[in-house]
Amino acid sequence: MPLPALIIIDMQQGMADPAAGERNNPHAEENIATLLHAWRSTGAPIVHVRHISRTPGSPFWPGQPGVEFQQRFLPAPRAHVVEKNVPDSFIATGLEPWLHVRGIDRLVITGVSTNNSVESTARTAGNLGFITQVVSDATFAFARHDYAGNPRSADEVHWMALANLEGEYAHVVDTTTVLAQLHAAEDDGTGSSPYIA
Image (cartoon, rainbow, N blue to C red; front, side, top):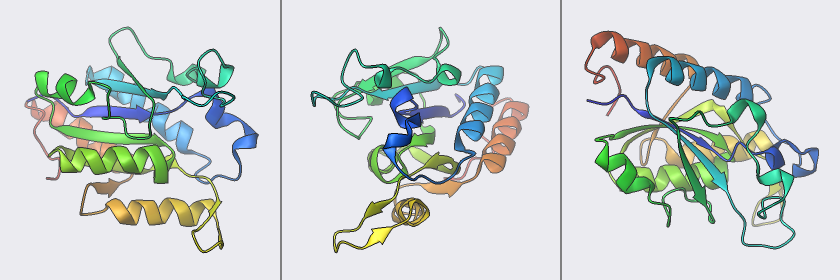
């Protein structure tokens, strides 16, 4: 059975721009890079997702510097790259058949932002039947106002998004747990243990 796919969502230069606003999890990039190195070391499948905006003037509009991958997250030759136009990485991208053809039924999701592209992708993954994990310290969010106009910190936005996912669409884990699972599955030789269902 294949090892789980690492999904790295929207780690583009535009996300590192201070103009994006107050954010949480300042060590998220380091954790994502650690997971990426571990996946590359084991030869497990990796999917790099980037957002291509349909809105002129967006930092993610084609040709803008913000649309490019951050240097440490540049895809390796064997990595699969998905380009999306909406938050959900499954919509009109071919990601689902790419995973099915390879027999991949387990996903580990990282990236940005927790309440937007990460959450929407994880919801669809869960609904499609993938065994999905979202890595809490390898994702991050930005501060925003709620629908009633109350300011919410980046931490509040992040943790509520994860609460929306936990148990219903995905399991929320941390980097240390995922690394231990990956190495145990590799040592097992089948890639099937001990990922939670």
